[in-house]
Image 1 (tube, rainbow, N blue to C red):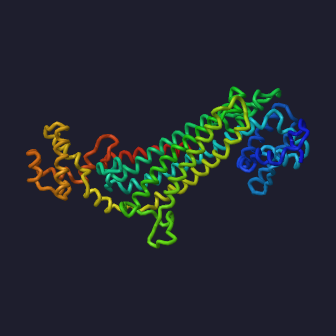
Image 2 (cartoon, helix red, strand yellow):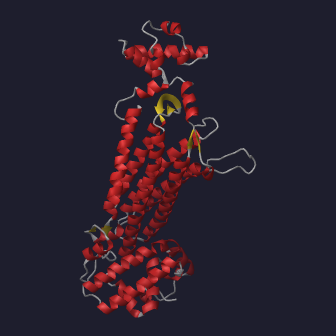
Image 3 (cartoon, rainbow, N blue to C red):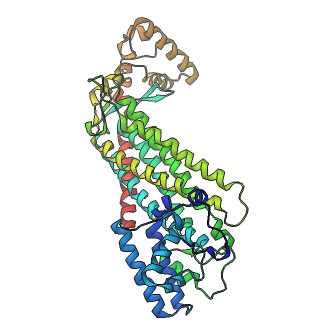
Length: 464
């Protein structure tokens, strides 16, 4: 089978080389983008008078037939034609005859593939933004139901201070908000058009790159043709944002695994997001958050893989760049699947409020408030800190918690203690007293929820 580029060659391509260098097994995912780019390109060629109007119409009709086959899943791809561009061009020529060969006027596979990936990431990034918002909505819904729910707050996975469970959930809301902002900002760099840059130096034809960019919805064109065909920064940026987003998904997944364990029992995940054991009938395994946690590694790997491919490449295009696609596709699909599962898993999880409340009563996470109590009575914080440390040590020795100690026992450590210490030490008071901006007091949490609602509403209006 002769190659579309085979005029200069005297031998058939080695079969192993053909299979090794072909990318059609994975870049067929760009089929619709390739057709979209070709439709814009041929429209521009016609408007510039580079090819006749009747040829433009024939090519467009052929491309629309190919698009229908792609959407119907009946498109046939062959390794012999190497990549998505050559496969589509060969099918076009088969459909409409030699006039199909005019489509490639004024462009190269180098700018063509870059255009396809810009179009692909533009679409995928917008989809990811909507999926992140769905997760945020799920977190916000749970937060609204748990403003007054108290849970131990941790540092070093040691109980630190009690917090509102809503406050804990909202911490993830803001992580995902930053991820979403990064995705939105990246669109400014995704929406650059490389089409018309040619192989690396532009073209001799009087094309209009701004027009093809306009037809494709790009905001601007690359001002340098060599940069246009060799730039993969926009993919690295997507992989980087995805890696950070997966980090946040993984951290939350870890908490879900911990909270749903027999040792914590703070939540119960819906049965539809868990599996059982083949040998232990009592088991309910949190497989989904465990896999979300694990899949973070493959996303990191895709980022490092592409950075490694790019680090030593001279300008302009090199075959190495074929390795940019599989990692991009894998990350997009992994991220998409992860977000699609995370939102409903959050929505359906059962929060065991009484278990959380009981846990707060069985620790020393209210100790800081005793120190603050003494500070308000004129004791220096460092002195108060030492006094409370001794009280905690005493309580541990007695097998008691701070609310269990008698007033007589408190007086042994400081005459400043009064009956109101028991109010100060109650979990509700401990949480409610933290009214500083961004704190865990219910009043502050409600303000946070209001702000989160406003953010989501503003973004939804912008999408309309």
